[in-house]
Length: 395
Image 1 (cartoon, rainbow, N blue to C red):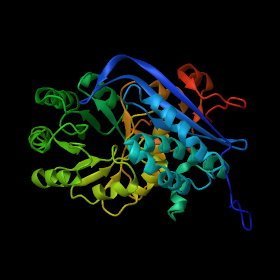
Image 2 (spheres, rainbow, N blue to C red; image 1 turned 135 degrees about the vertical axis):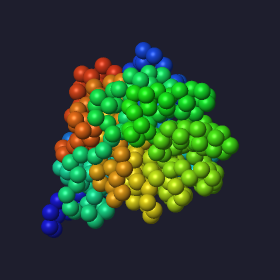
Image 3 (cartoon, rainbow, N blue to C red; image 1 turned 90 degrees about the horizontal axis):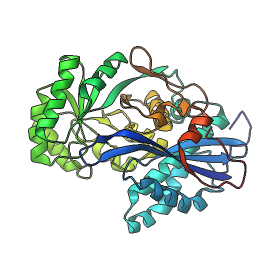
């Protein structure tokens, strides 16, 4: 409601516009499971009246994922048009309940969650514009918290290794970031070379995290956690496949390591099994991929001691959403800031700013608080849905 006695706010969705943005990479970025050849994202814009809200749907992998996303969003479109976006969690829950039977038969719950995440993020941005309130304030108010929220949130640098290790570590230090995350899950020799190079540049005291991208089985993870742990690794992210929490619990019991994960766990309900695991220190839902904003926020409010540290390897909307989520979380963690160049994060919009002490400012403008550069958006646009009206900008 907008005031005492006012009618409840409604935001019927009148139009959905989808843009695929792409920025080719000069060099491939190796991962334990594949390699990144281009930065890509899908922007989803919802219009209600003269208001627009824009979200992001993750399409890093596979390389043809953006084509699937267009088809999925086109299939979802009839279920969203005319729906009320004024209660994004209710909209997200209704869409998930309606479509997950199809997703199970299709064998593709992940792509569906990724598409719904973009719609959910756009709905929150739209609601923020209508309420003239930043996302963090909306999330805190929904949880019953009305006190002041932080102006900045802590960040760490990610994407270090297996290439450009020294350069990226130096970049993190220059930017004042208080921790770095290394990519592991390659060979034992490569993984040890990465952590040794980080320590050679940063010294023994910088907090270092390790991300294996689900590359190991239990015996390999036990051995590698011991070898890498000798260099002071503070948490191991996705050391095992994320669909077997019982194996993660066993690994933590055997090794005593602190665990992090969640970027491949779909839905807040599934996240509960991980939040309850002993040694699980950081929940990492991805607001553009696994849960949208609504369920990422719900995951951060699950019982337990795990902190909310969203996974963020996308564009500007994902980063802004992550900052707002951490600012509003009851157990705030860290925001992930990829150290490799990504113009889809840095060039298409102005939003959270990195301070001299390695924190990110929480936007105070309505919704996600992003100010888009239309020329940059157009420059990186590979595809846009035909519009029956004036082509809207993602703002």
